[in-house]
Amino acid sequence: MVFLDFEQPLEELHNKMEALRERQDLTEEEIEEQVGKLEKLQSSLRRKIYNNLTGWQRVQLSRHPKRPYTLSYIEMMCSRFVEMQGDRCFRDDKAIVGGVGRLDNMTVMFVGHQKGADTKARQYRNFGMPNPEGYRKALRLFKTAERFNMPIVCLIDTPGAFPGIEAEDRGQAEAIARNLFEMARLTVPVICVIIGEGASGGALGIGVGNRIFMLENTWYTVISPESCSNILWKTIDYKKEAAEALKLTAPDALELGIIDGVVKEPLGGAHIQPEAMAKALKKHLKKEINELKKLSPEELVAQRIEKFSAMGPTETIKK
Image (tube, rainbow, N blue to C red; front, side, top):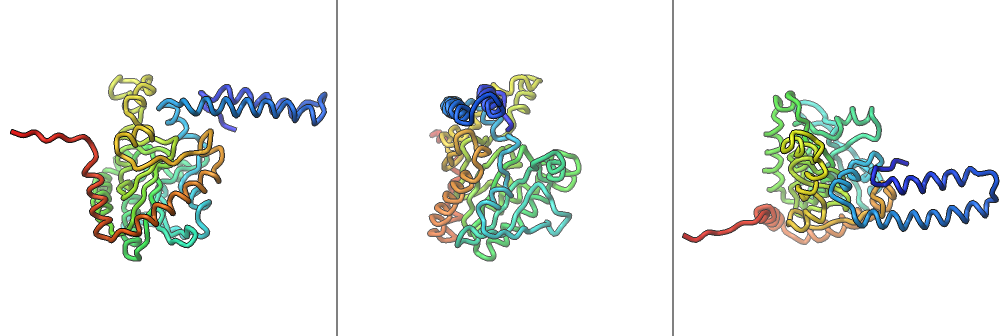
């Protein structure tokens, strides 16, 4: 198991349980009895820790190496999935995946960022940082879904769009801006869920939806805490303070009116019980899709535009 720094007390208990199971001087009954006591203590301690998480600790959880990624959720939620590749202009961007999946009796177009489970896979997926062709592939799939009247589900998990010069040469800014424009006008239901990291335009490039949700231990803001700290303090040493100041957690985003709801994770995070997390997310998606299907194409577009237009405090000054 992988433990984060704030989970050190849990790691110590875990190591004690593992050491107990290897002891030869105790009977099986004695080992089980002592392990059971430690498991109860660990459960109580985990609840105490996770009921008082800071912004930075949630950022750490969103990056947990064992956390499920887009393809993991699709595999667990869908009875069948056919991946669609390529932007029909340049190449297939492995940092964004998408295709048609069966969500019980629903046919849904899934689009999402994909990271990798190990170093080789992360390099292959460019660490979940899309190039312009990734956003153009996403747009192609959005338009396909619209043509065949399929609801769209976007699963967001990226540290940001790829910042390389070659990405800018191929029109990174234009590709993201085009997606914002076109997603606002889609005539089918669009649901966006932040399942990990939601950074800047990299996340927003597939983040314009009728409903926007965040899993409990995720973050969504214009810049990562490290980058914010580096800009303001010229060092990343203040990343914890930056995380608090950015108001990047799911409860913060809900309070600010940026998202529509928070999907609760299993105690300890989505990586502790990925199947349970996928089951909860599937149930939530089906409910929201059924709600949105009641709206006409014109109502879906109007609702989406009104939703984003209302974000942020405004004040009318009379002369």
